[in-house]
Image (tube, rainbow, N blue to C red; front, side):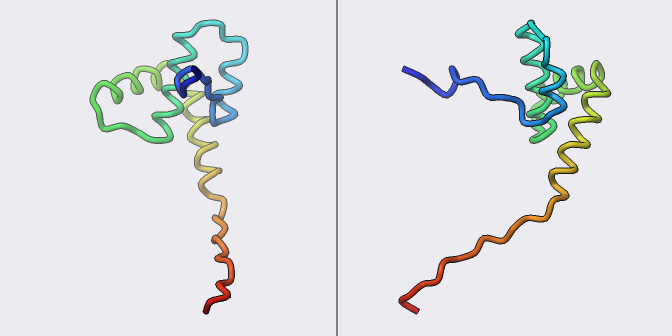
Length: 89
């Protein structure tokens, strides 16, 4: 039986994809994916904040690249959803 945990999810940013190329260490991979997730949705939990802080200090260039990419994505205008015509009106 397949579960959501057994399906690997690719990184969401090109910066992390690039950083993971050639990485053959599951701990490093987990740290970088955690960092990306934390940058996207910071957690108020102390343990997560401390872990993210350590990884951020070790990878300032990657943090800057992730932040820049996420800011660039958020600056795109959102498209309003078009509601279908309701023939009953």
